[in-house]
Image (cartoon, rainbow, N blue to C red; front, side, top):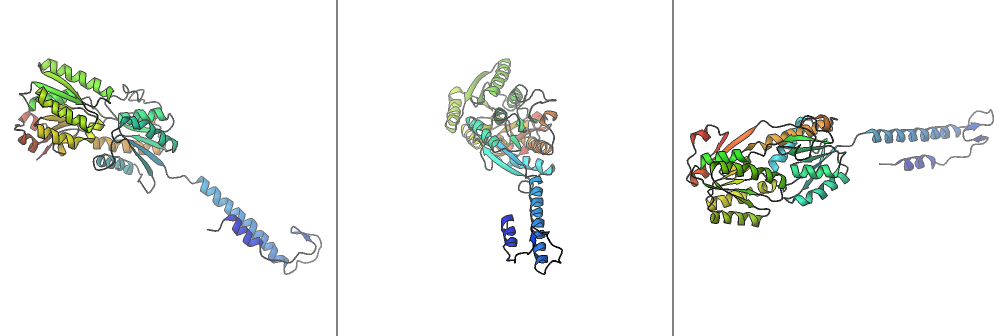
Length: 366
């Protein structure tokens, strides 16, 4: 496209004879303009008009709003394991009128299970001046909050965003954060379900990620109290890497563990294929927080629907992009909870599913 200088130069470089008795277009005598003077006046008018048109075009371009950009700060890995949740998030955005690649751009950052990487990834998104940050877990939400107090943040949080230090209250978040609170403090409830499913269990274990300190303290306390009430032996196993998961399952045999509760943790969730394979190999009945474990071959899960939660997060992000302030948007809580059982896995473990659990199940996977 021809720029302003090229256009004006093309006009003014047209050869023209000198104008007798004229200076800058002002007549100094009273004679009629010659045949050469009229075209030159037109050329001068064209130059002024062209400059005006270019100025108007520049002003219109400056007023046109750029496509908004969302920065996604995700604790997990990119790929098929996180795809359903990101798909639900994008669906929520579409329902709010935003489609990636059409009227919205998204910058993805992946922690790949390493919580210590999140602060740098959050700082990178802030440096790129994104319009909004979507934090997929409580850990990424805390990293984003530490990185900025001005860019809006919409999170998928845990059971208590207030206790986690994300918001002032659920009804009035205050600050630049809001989102969806997902109840992941259901450890005692999961133990109760597991005891119905495995009535012979007398020794239980809880497997946690030691990097997730805030959640672990609550989960360990809840499960320890529940085990004490039932008169069961209770062990806490820790794993923050693939090799430590292998070691934890090897110790289950040495401790004579009858049933295992796997904590709700993004890193552990990302290793669900490994969990399912080891639980099957060791023949240890295990209960998980999320449906995805059972769909991959795990025995049983109980917890809120993460798909529903991420869809709500997308809808909230759309509201913020349209001008709503996070401080004025109450933290939402999903109402969909799922009890999912894999009947094939139960059969392989020699377990009979009690009728009391079957009638409560939301989904039975054959």
